[in-house]
Image (cartoon, rainbow, N blue to C red; front, side, top):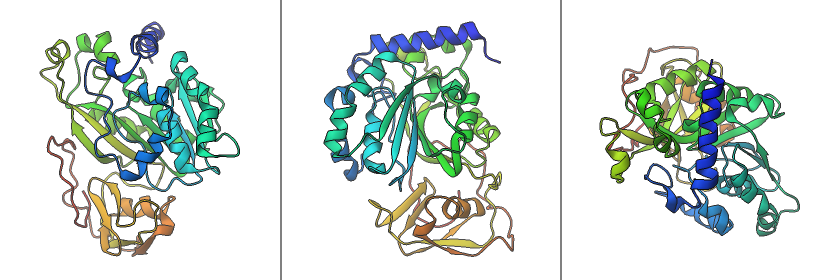
Length: 357
């Protein structure tokens, strides 16, 4: 149970920091946020269509544009001024929809003020975006129906929430079966002491609210997301001495995870002798499909997978783009490399081979 007074105090600090203290991304005091490293070429013109004021007030830490979004219904948790909402609005198309939720009035005012600009820019007959004020810990109070979203995204915001377990539980409830939570956030290599947790500057800069990575894994599983998959990560360097001196004993990472609402997933990667073949038919991804940092599936190549990966592809919006080999009739044991060590690597490498974990 969260202390209500402490929760309100933190929320007010965050609202003031992102609504009044920060006027643009240049005002941030660390480099935890605001990276567009390795921006895919197909996203560049989409961002070019977004109003300059919206772009200026972007404070994310990664990209939250998963594959195969045409016609999807998407919820953006902590949408801010709406950059990701308006980028995703172009990917879902006129038959899809994107709803943004944020608790900061100043940010929402900017997002809403440019809604008609983007409708005209995208040449849509009607708006496919909507913004609601609310707290992510209280998503159940915003009138959304259970099982109503195909995808939920969030970009460097869950770390600012005082009750992260509630956020994951509400997200699981709001997703349709087979839907996914695809989000970027900041994580730490160990738990932070109370003195740092209570530092307003570190909290606003997305550092002191960062989850210890294994606490995140456990919270996600408790919410129902049984097999969190790391898509990509980068080690955060802090060039501001005022901040770096306080956190010298800690390593921080910006990481993107995808969590599927698939109740039959197992706790570990089990081998059933299965494989998939990607057809190359997902828009913008003709040569390969990247499920996560361990599954770079080249088009046309037989790719061995565990039972969980097979379900993530067969029981979701990706099914029509794959050929599936095998079933669950015979079990060959656990994938031997499926461990519990910290998943982040300062020198991340990408594996192009088959197999799991």
